[in-house]
Length: 196
Image 1: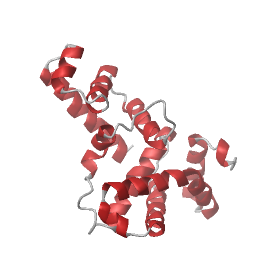
Image 2: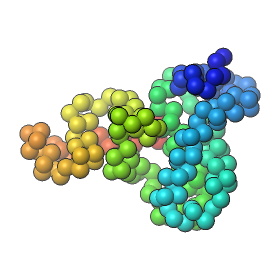
Image 3: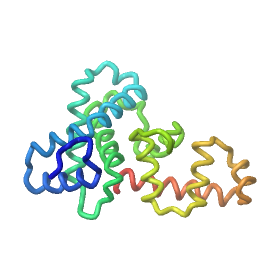
């Protein structure tokens, strides 16, 4: 198995995860940790930025909590999982683990039902920037299999920050149609983040 970090694709990582599930070989976990190290650090920074109370915790301690969350994500991946959704799956479990570990300090942090909403609100979808957040959102849109016009409504609302009225006029839809596409589309994306 190829263990060169620079050439490890998400498909290679998925193979390692399946092998780790069968063998519990910690060496595989270390390779995966090295591959997703930057993602874990980014998640911790985002969490600390979103909740000032977490800044009182040591980064090293939070990193260990993030590793536990990442391992839980790996152990719950089933055959047929889309490897492109690995970063989103890891992020979801790390968030959950941090919230559980620091529950006395995470009241300010938004609950799971607004994770996708906040990601869109923060404009993390940017196809020209090579970062995990951008890729996660792109993969979510693709994996959701939402009709293109639904994806367009979501992007206009949260990325271009258009009002419902502006979207209605631009796409020649009724207000109810816009709201329905937003509500059901976000619900579908949310399900993918929590249970891909």
